[in-house]
Image (cartoon, rainbow over all chains, first blue to last red; front, side):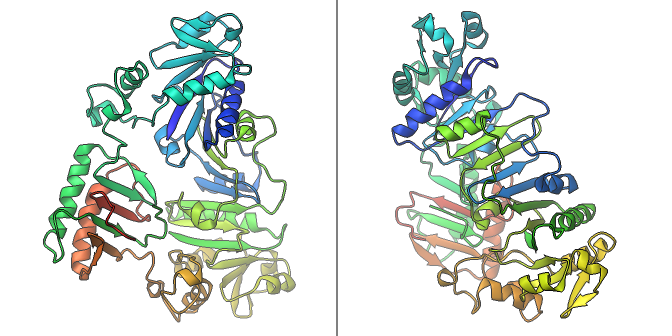
Length: 255
Length: 255
């Protein structure tokens, strides 16, 4: 799953850029999802007094509204981006305004001051009204999100890679960089996605409720040792054969 | 995870019953979630023209709005109850107006005609304004949802069991009944939840090189404890969800 984010101040045109990216990616037959960060303290999607709001106020911390054509799952807490992305199984997920998750970034801006305020090595394109004045800025392409959307999405197809695990550095340490640094190195062509061992076809895979759970290699080793420690005593064990263990009814598991 | 539903015509007081049930279950320290079925064709939680609505109209079929205090995951399709329940990890989930999923049912009603329209063997209690007139109806307790909520929740604690798999009969056939029939049999005391082999914690299955390896229950317990001991520390662990672990390339494994 490939993930990118569009950042910029309110009113800089982020949503217009994203609409055009989603439309163009969809035209190219990709399955696209999105996440919108809402920087507004009083944000509540549900109106006061609706039935679902009443469920929540009575004490339900997860309330779903199921209609004929949509299903809205309302968590009464801020989820981490990693927790949100567990719900996605898309070719591309486009984030709007998300700034605490390390993925390649487009800056939406009117002015070079607005660019400078957000610029770092994870930026691979700049868009928004500034594209009327500049073609590149500090070596980064500046692209009109309407008239030149095909070129912007060509760059997305070329540059964006499977999302990095965004694990805290102290829990991972599998490559010598933080995820933010590795995003920059991959965009610069100095490293590739394969330099991160996580999210590759690991030898030990774990699904919980049908969702694949990423494990750093040392956790994979612990789990492998735990399972093999038991099953190697059983008739039928063969150290070269694939072992699979299912706990539960498997009806919620998809392969 | 225990699931019940409250059904009844619009205006019969379902939400009031559910509010009181959720409040009382929460008071008893249970973790409670809910699902509201919206029988209104034009239902859309998002307003026309919001940024998330624009993402959706551009082609994103899954859009998340993340605020400071809530995270709303908006699927642009009607999900099945089984798919919705994968998001839950609660002691109780209370459904409002859901009528296509086999779980024990409370009817909310003003009149006996309204009761009769919804009555079947999966009904374990009746509530709503009819409780001002009757104490029981056809052997089923009729309970005031406000003044007598403690008794209603006592009955819920006594009667409600872990949700059945609600698999299509032709795909299951593990017991001799449909899930609807088994709900009725369990409520009547003729069967227990253990008569459904699916979703029990006991089910630990092991394949080595694609061959199922039989394990006596105590070996199943050892293997379950070994796996759960590791995976319960990971993000994404949910004690109700099926866990599957694969060691090796999976190419020789069949499910």
